[in-house]
Image (cartoon, rainbow, N blue to C red; front, side):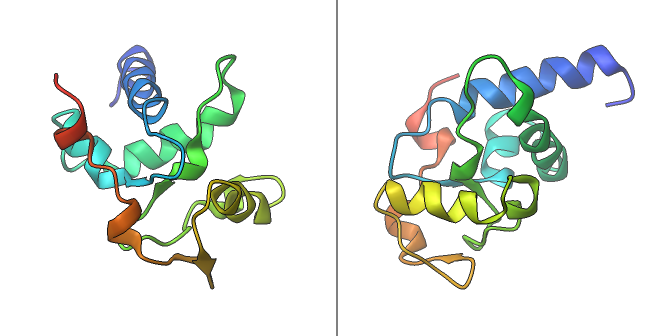
Length: 115
């Protein structure tokens, strides 16, 4: 992702996927990266989520977690507690920054979306 334009294109693809995550469901950075064919770019998906707060069209970044269902990106929300609050508003129980019953809420774009 050396080229700024390529990075923005990738971010836009990430945003498109994240906008399709249904309410009450969550996915992981890695699942999005794998779906987009760049499995080793989970960290870049995280950077996209950090930038998502500045998009004109809403991106439900609170639905993207680490592979274990932890709210590792919460410090990029203002305030950090708003990530958990948004998930709880959708009926997802969070305890100590960990989504409870993670597999029940897990949404895999590779299964749910067709390229």
